[in-house]
View 1: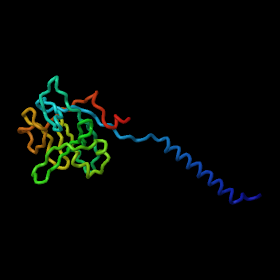
View 2: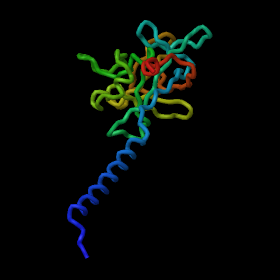
View 3: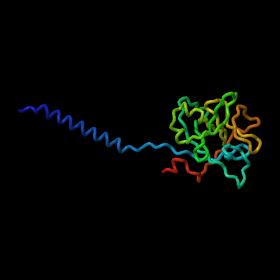
Length: 200
């Protein structure tokens, strides 16, 4: 009985390997693409039922009236390697159609951090490295039916509104005094389009 030639064995092995490779490629090709989650949209109200609006580039809390247009906040979950679950969910917030991002930073010469609006697209910020994102990340924690927003970069500092109407939204490390730190998030269904939605 004749033995099969060595090259035939090699050819059979090569054929099997090629078939496996094709199947593997097909498997990856058919896998669904992972797309970034779209921002959720909310209007935000404080404990006095004042609504947050954007007035000449400044966030203010004003009485909720029929003629007042609440600012639409674009809210996006943000990964944080050292996230503290007890503090809440790390998120990014933006206004002005998702093109001005909320940031908590301490300016040079200042002893306290302040709330700032940075001209940066939320969709671009979400793809940056964690170190660059940290000043923009806030812990959203539930307090009953309301939410607090604590800075990740400056622990113990919360987004707040004044008891007085029309005052700018700021940051405080003193809870339960003159400033309000608990907010209601009301989902917006017909909001302005985000930059990504506008280009789709």
